[in-house]
Length: 444
Image (cartoon, rainbow, N blue to C red; front, top):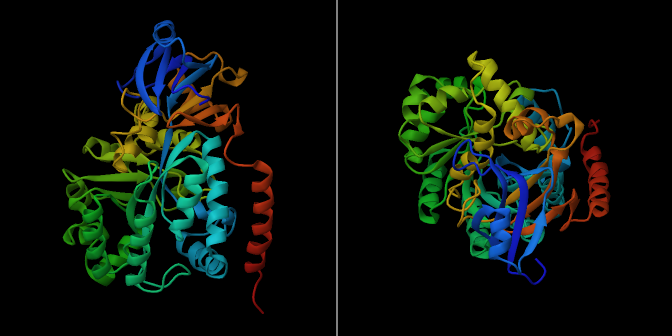
């Protein structure tokens, strides 16, 4: 921030998210040491801090950084592999074989770098990850300046990262020991899914999350067949099993939840559970529709995520907001369902709450981290800009994102990445494209 400890960001409009449905006109954020100190009229801010660095964003709107509540950042190198198949077909025939051959620290570092570049260029300042070689993902988060909640992933079967349940837990403990004091890295404990993790490991997950005071992050009720198989094999719905194991009595992020009946709603009510809604991945895999309006009516917090690029195929939170808003209307038959301001809140504060970070990020308020995105509404396609929330959610694309700040540090300026080299990313992606292609050749 040059040598100035204080940075002022001015814009014609600011959407702080809290207070809800508020538009601040000709205001500025006063940022000191990465934290929002005040939000004031521009003239007042400049008069009060004559020595501060001032950055104006003409024709733009400042919003809180978008928070991607669920992704698999290392999987960006598998974008486009096995498209147009069902979830289990896609996993078993395409994704797991490729990962079995290629997964390594180098693969995860390259994939995470590419994902972070894409997320920053789309206005995402924080993401919740679920993947392997977490130490390597943490290193890339540290290098690039973004914020992340990293999942300490658990399976009950071997992967290139760990062979046994004990080893997954030990790997997770090592990551926390290495990165637990980082100012932009937090954690969640991430058992993959009810069908890949048994009761004994899930009870250990619950204990570990309590000990670390972090959320549990898990794919739950992603498809109808997942629920049907559980009923057939175990005699209970996956969510009921998780409740019985005590997992829903502490902060829990249930990813997808396309299958929700009245018994599920009763289990979710009054418990510290958030839903990570990933509408585009669910649509592409034909997994179903998360009943967002029903869940919200029951008082349940909804976060927004993209899922991984292998099943989406992008990490575009602006696109995800639009899809979420349109889908909520189509599924509920109510045009007033999930209005633009609510979609923006879901993608910022809703996701921050799910990650246990709502005291630090998710809205533009004094005392919070200065994770800020400037969205340009000057393009002809966005004129006339009557309602900035509606323009962002229903009309803009992620190309409208101009500048991105995390903890007051600029990471994207005028669409140029400041902590990543685009040419290096292209070269790395091409190297892995060829390696991935080799895994897709049919065996003789």
